[in-house]
Length: 194
Image (cartoon, rainbow, N blue to C red; front, side, top):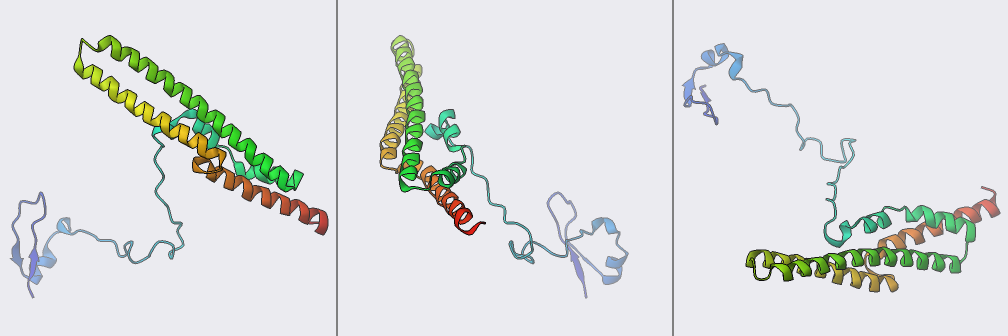
C-alpha cells in the first residue's frame, strides 16, 4: 500500500509517493490531528446544549430613536400582570391599552418633531449652498429625503397605533397577555386560596 502526501496552501512540497515504512518513520510535525467528533455528530438541541439564535442588529431608521427604544424597552407583560391582578375588569384592560397607545403616540410625536427640525435645518443649508457646490446640495437633498421618509413612516405608525396596529401591536399583545395572567392569578388566589 502506498500513501501520498498532498500539497496544502503555503506548503512548498509537491505530492510524492511514500512507502508505508517511510510514512511511519516520518516525523509527527507533518501530522494534523483531527477532532474525533464534529458538529454533525451531535445535532443542535439533541446534545443538551441550548440553541443560540443570532442576535438582531440594532435597529436603524425611525426605530433607532431613543424615545422609541425606551418605549419598547418597558416590560409591558409585567405591567399588564400588575394591572390584571389589581383591577380584573375588561374596562381596565381597555383603559390600559389606551394608555399604552397614548404613550407610544407621544414618543413617536417627539421623534417626528426632532426629525422635522433636522429637515428644516438641512433645507436651510441647502439654500445656503445652492450656488456653491452641486455635490453638497445633492447630498443635503438626499439627507432631507431620507428624513422625510422616516417622518412619513412615523406618522403612519402613529395613525396605525390608534387602531392597535403597526409597531405597537407587540406591546399591546404583551400587555394583554400579562393582564390575563395577573387576573387569573388574583382570582385563583381569592377563590382557591393559592
